[in-house]
Length: 231
Image 1 (tube, rainbow, N blue to C red):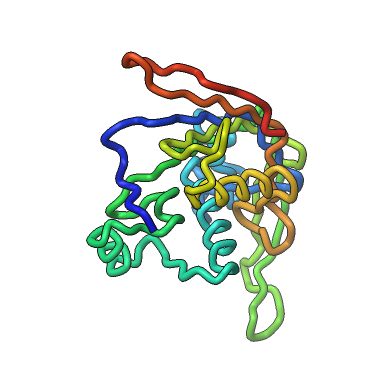
Image 2: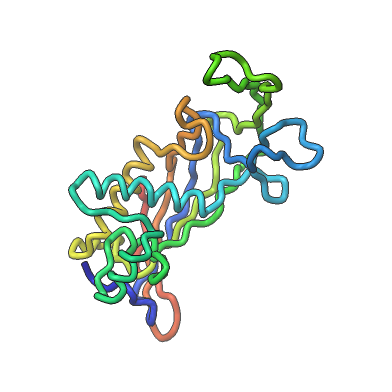
């Protein structure tokens, strides 16, 4: 595993911009304490009244997916909060590929994932009940109302990849390239689930369309060296 602490200079930057779509109802919520005056108990997260999927939520989803993928191939994957393992990697200048993408306490992230905003402001409400697991009946006062984004809503998407040569000619000597390609492929085809109620099918998002643009530094300025469609 190499030392990915290479932020002393910008070697290559790739911007991925496109559109996400939720194929099933979606709820990125604000917890059980709804905003003051809200007609629902569990509200959709908003920024300036626009439904939003935080970049931190998307980044966490991407990391979780790649951790499970990497582990299935026999690699010893560790969580980002495993301070002992992280300190050992930093001391030995030998970071795992997952941390080489998403960062940890000793290493900055090589990707930036931006907040995604719904292109239309549509929601619907769904009433649910809380079940008493001991008695198998509805809990007293267990009726609640959740707010969801309906299916087939489009969201803007942007992710920057820093100092990882994934386009236009992938550098497969860098194991992170294969991982990022796997992430983009699965997000584009099968999709990934985010938010609440995933166990009942909610939150399936896909990358509907996207373009990549790659830059290098030349004479102190960003120079475009390639662009193309991902889908």
